[in-house]
Image 1 (tube, rainbow, N blue to C red):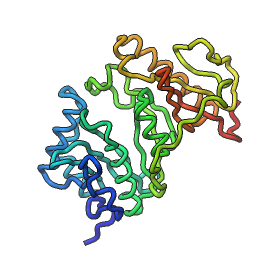
Image 2: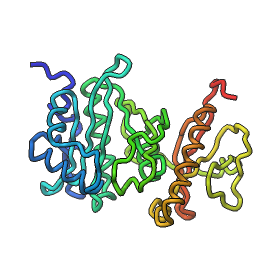
Image 3: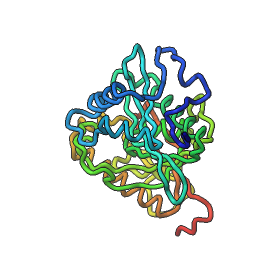
Image 4: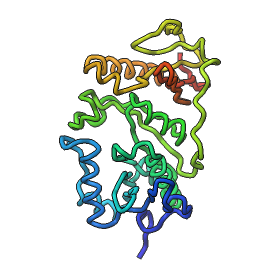
Length: 292
């Protein structure tokens, strides 16, 4: 029987994915009905009981027969996190769409999300899947750092309200705008994150922001070589100010990304200024785009 693109059949060769780390966490495919139900329970724990897009155990099982990949992070047989995606065809090429990455709230500073994504990438590469795609919320600086700085993804699109309302308190009641990213599976994982770019060379670059600070270079409608697109450095602080503040950030970020992509810019890094609690996407103009 052929197992082409049955991604649950074998493990990546690198034992660092499966051996316990310093926290005692190891990774493995989730393949049993007990595993699937544990994954459903974890989805509820991560996104809340009102979350309307939980992937049920039956779909997790069925997907494993047609190229789905479900990997868990466990410690003492307790599921701490998981990554789930589906393999399909895009423009006549077999690709993978990573649909969900969830980590229990008390395990989010243990590097589990990064390890799961690197496991996923290695497994896909071994099975001949050259590219994978996923989405993340552009307002989430931690996720942007993981995806852009550490995993080295390429941001390819901005989609307005991609998933609609899903009921999760983690979505804060605002539109579910998402960045779509592409990742080459043959890229080597970075043992340490890419250094956040120093802002000194960019101090004269305009800042696209709904909350300008004293000393910021204000965008005047020009098309400079680089721009800084600000997002909240601390989402908890922003959400604590109420829905109007959060919606102002969402609308501003949407407008700024749409302008930037229209004018030939691409995301090259995420810079976090922890002292000022500010975060910026660094966007540079691609050469020969013909943008005006």
